[in-house]
Length: 450
Ligand SMILES: Cc1ncc(COP(=O)(O)O)c(C=O)c1O
Image 1 (cartoon, protein in one colour):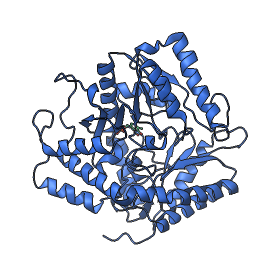
Image 2 (cartoon, rainbow, N blue to C red):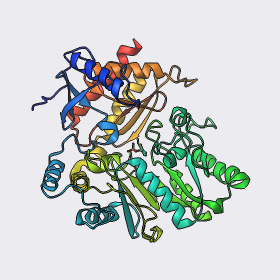
Image 3 (tube, helix red, strand yellow):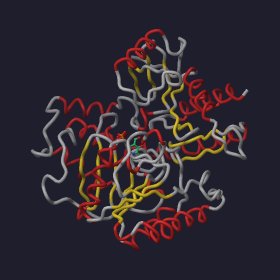
Image 4 (cartoon, rainbow, N blue to C red):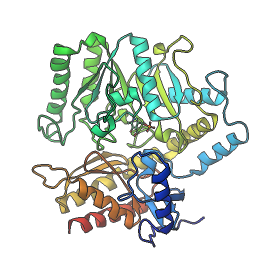
């Protein structure tokens, strides 16, 4: 197929073939989040870190299909595992009959997830389903009805997960009432928080304010803590803007949780599977959650979700929760191969490349006033654009323009939050390829600010 070793955009965007597909898409497909103006990309094929569009243009991918393609596009080992499974059987109704592939995956997840205790796994097909299962396991096992989530979080768009999601108002527009019993606290966002604390300078103060808010405002006024089943959080907020909380935050949250016997649900759908330079995001923060939600990158590009939880929290009664496709055998085979590939060097590569991103983004921050903040771990980086560093006014249209200018130069990026761009390449990216992408990103910023 041949993708060369550099992006090549030879047509205007969208090109002639792409333009037709985009028109047909908007005629026949339901409206979701596609943006024909700022993301007019029609993907045809790909390999590793490269996409080819329908007009033959070649792009470097810094978006990994929204954090899915951590092992790269069509990773050869994952492809081999999928092909092997395709020759045997694809679907085996794993919630009614038994199959070993699912068990193997559950055993593997038991072993690699944080927490020195025995666990069980519920398999599904997506991130939102893994969150739904977490909410149900939590209610079932604690017999409590309430949840506390965090402002800025994204957990999915089905009704349970949507009730906790609080990243953008559009996500909930005309959808009320959502699930009752859900309360939100500010997330310890070091750059933007209700107390205007500089959370980089004073991380502990920021942590204390959030914990105090939950304990002294929520729990002492209107949310009885003895009825709270779980805290649910993203270790690093993804859709909300790639926001990294202070290192001690989750340890303090756990202390509060223990005080009231509340469980912790870590939604690792976007930050899990090596993205942050460790297999799971929470590993940076020294806690082991009671429930972990996985999706996106787990299947190496095939759809699969998993909810991994303390064994004693299991339903135990058949039929309380189940599904049809969860743990599809091809997806399970892909997930097992994905985990192996990640363990065999890709997580390490993500950790190794962290300093390259940190240094280059620091240089860009020093050069361009439009960058208000940048933050990240491993290969999970967010760059937030502002009109003014003092007022922190969101530079949303400039952010969109930078996305488009990057795309025109052959770099695929995605926005998140109100004015942030996330840089999330595959974990198999080389230093040389990463530099190509970072150079294009800088050129795109330059073209918009000058
Ligand atoms: C942290 C997190 N949780 C849950 C979801 C929902 O996953 P899905 O879109 O597969 O339902 C997402 C999707 O972006 C996510 O980032």
